[in-house]
Length: 171
Image (cartoon, rainbow, N blue to C red):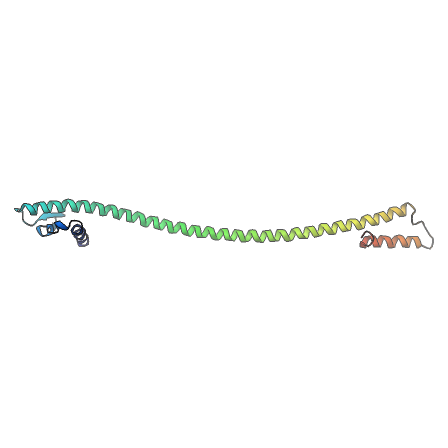
């Protein structure tokens, strides 16, 4: 029993039982024996005071032990809470990072989709040019341009194929 505990008990007892404050004048705490004892063995009031203080002190001490135990549990729970709060902050940071990565990937995906659409469009235009050139060649096979020793019709065929490949004939 420390002096601090004894003074805390006295303070609690005198506040709780104001009518019994004189008990401390009739009894004292025997450190060697670890309990309250009477100041005068032949005074029944002193004996009763010692018994009341002994019982009250035992109950108070028991409650203090429970309070101390709960205080330790609360400290451990607070430590766990701080650990979980740090984990939550870490998870929030990870989520933020993942969100930024998602936004960047979405932007890259959109850029690549735009490039693919551009390539597809260019491919469609190229296909039209090639189809027009193939049409000119098919017409040449069918004799549309005819054949001239001067090469005039062949020149027209060549010019038309060049125009087709440049995309000038199908627009």
